[in-house]
Length: 406
Image 1 (cartoon, rainbow, N blue to C red):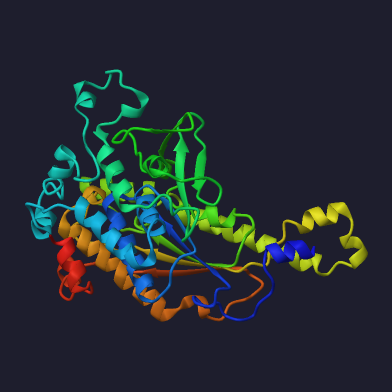
Image 2 (cartoon, rainbow, N blue to C red):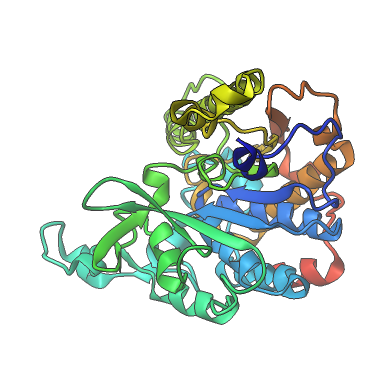
């Protein structure tokens, strides 16, 4: 019984603090292509507030951002994120105002991504365009090659650092052969560039990545919001979890084909996040209830093996989930996740920076809560933003602003 309490926390009435060292700070990054610039802005706000994560978890583009954070010294993380997003962004021939008014939405502005790929990320695979029945190697069966991303990650991430110092890194990937989610964790194994590539190998655009003889695709196919990795961890620790969502779970009724495609994508990749979070809340409340009930038992009963087994499922850790929801931008459509235009990247980075600054100012994890619950959800959302308004007074520093716009 005492061992279980040591592993799974103790009753503490004090409100958690980001700097007291009692609670682990966790970042959870969704997958979402170009939408991931929002996550970089969130990390910047935390860094500015001297809040560094103990654990970073990501899927797809979230795994890329997570690896850059975990694979660099705190003093260079912002610069490396900036280097990545500056490298993969491109100038757009059409501005957002034209795209919003166009019958084709953002299809025309994003033609560069579709036809030429993204520098430092992916490029067209000519063999794949010979026909859908052309036999390719399993590791080459994709419309694009991600070799540019491999080189980019090898340059920007110190993989030797992972597992030895800095934050713990966990990235999710889907096993092609078994349809099982696999979390690669720097605490348990050496993480290299292939693990990050596997987490972002979204078919049919990108080919699968082989790790230890097995093929893996983008983890977002099975779980695009890997918050369960925190709750399924052992030993479990009290945590403040910043769950950064780039796909909006809420939206208006679509009344055009473009809006239908946009909303369908939001639903698909928001990955039942709210359902997963509710399930984790139920499980964690059950763990608290077990601990409460076990605490009422006489000492001789606690020595019985079957009771000790039940007691081992109890837990008194406190989990605060701060859910940051990337706002919708007027004029965006179903191609928003391939909008690697410099203006698109800048807008989403700024949105993440603003939202995380607001969360840090409000400190919802310090609000009065019922200590018996153990799970607390705090949501911060802006339903929609106007690109023109967002760019009136950009919060980015001059150096970062110049780098992103180079």
